[in-house]
Every structure is written in structure tokens, then in C-alpha cells.
Length: 381
Image (tube, rainbow, N blue to C red; front, side, top):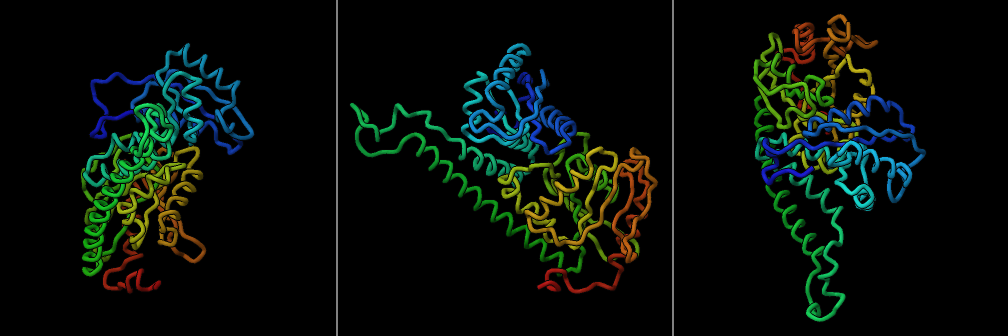
């Protein structure tokens, strides 16, 4: 979906009417995926005009959904007067172009939809740079030869001689901008690393909240630290990492960070662009993996978060599972231990505060005051 140059949609603009397409290729949990797509579309500012679902063995190389299904989508779109069609899948540039020709409207895939939401939510300078970088990298794979009538290589009167095609110019300009953004983000990353080294020298424990989007991380962060980070019942409510001291009786000094939420099939370009922000998780002494215990697809959400943590190099960081919203899931708050007596999970409610004292005790047990070991980075070197 288009956004303004600032990365925010104009509040006066009419909301898009979207037709959603969910294709089941046998991966399962189709209902949960469709529910998530609806939430993503709403978060991006779209009104849902209609939904088309289908089962296929594999994607069609040219039209993704197959010619017959695309014809049905075109009819349904016209009937619902939808402005655009959103696919809950990653489309190739060729597929997207072919679909727009057949459907006579904008076509947005899952990657572009998530990037659009991030563009709307980014508030800090670093967050905006990261989103723009991801968008440019995604856009560079979708440049098409829309200006072939001006290609000098084809010759003709007034077109002979050296020079770039518009496609080459677009690619060069995007490349220049990508390099500039990377340089700026590298500088911010070095500043972030300097602050992290200072915390390590001060023997402060770094604990990061990670989890699926809308699992309740920001609400829990506010509960634990007394902060007032924006928290809402929507996907990707906050993107910028926030750090606060978390005062725990009987424990080493702790700095808690609230990181961006993850989601299934998170775009790789977005993960790469947010590498400096996500480094808070990579360098943490402990990860608190917040899970919506009441969600019907929570196991798949846990797996999606684990996949992103592996992608950014945080798979080996110790973690405790936090089963949030235990009140909604009808679970009793408390601590779960493994066969060795080590705390593996805490059942709690960020909303009511149930289970928070048990979490604080778990952290004091993990990081008792005065018993600090060598930093994890040095110990594993």
C-alpha cells in the first residue's frame, strides 16, 4: 500500500477496500492464518470487502493462484468494489505484475503488507531508516521495464548513443540510497554497541523481551518497569526498542529491553534492516519469550519466533518462556521447571499482574546479587 514520503498514511485519506486471498498449500492452520491476515490488513488501514480462499497443491508460476481462481477473484473484486487485492503469500515480481493486469487493480503480497505497517508505525529516526532500507531492497526486486520506449540501446531517431535505460537509472539510484542508509545504520549500530559495552562494564544484566506480535510484550514491559511504552491490541503497535532499569530485590542490576514483535514469514529484508535493533536480543544474557497462552495457534507462533531468533544469531541465548494472558487461557499463575529443577516457564498475566512476583523471583534465582559469572560472550569464546 502506498505511503507518504514520511512513511505515514494521511489521516484524511479514505481507507482502502481490500479483497483478501488465502490459499492453503497443505501447511495447515488455514483458519488461523486467515485471521492473522485480516488483522494485518486492518492494521494497515484497510476495510475488508471480501475474502477468497482455496486449496492448491502448489503455486502457479505465472498467476500464483491459477487462471480459473484468478478469474473468480476478479469477479468477486468487482462485485465487492475492492480497491486492491491482498495475498497472504510472497509473490514474485512477475506474478504480481501478471495479477495486476488480470485483476485491473493493485495487488499487495504479504511482504509488502508487513512493510507498509512498519512504515506507518516507525517513529524513531533509526526505525524510519530501517523500514526505508527494507522497502528499497524489496522494491529493487520488482523494477520492471516500464520505460522501454526510451531505451537508447534499441536505437532509432533521437534515441541513439550511450546512456542508461530508465530501469538502469532506477536501480542505480536505489543502490545509492541503500548504501547511504546502510552507512547511517552502521553508525547508529556502533553507538548502540558502545552503550552496550558500557552496561557490560557496569556489570548490568541485559534481559530482552521477545515474542510474537501482540503477545503482550509492551504491556508486560510497562508492568515490570513502570514505563509508559505505547501498548495496544494491534499488530506491531511498537517498533522501537525501549530500555529501562528493572529493580529486582536480591538480584544483579538488570536492564530490560522491549523489542519489535515477530510474525510468521517475517520478510528477510526487514530482519536484515533491523539488525542493529535486534542485536539487543543477540547480546542479551537472557531472553524472556512472551507467548499469548490463550491463542489457538500459540505453538506455531513460538516456532515462528524461534526461527527469527535463529536467523539473527540468538538461538543459543538462554531463555525463559512467559505464558502471558494466563487469565484468558484459564491457567493458574506460577512457575514451571524442567527435570533438573531449572525454571523453563512462568505463567502470568501482564494485565492483572498475576505471576509477576514469581517472574521476579525467577530472575533473582537466575542472577543472584554478587554471584555474577564471566560475561556470556567471554565464557563461550
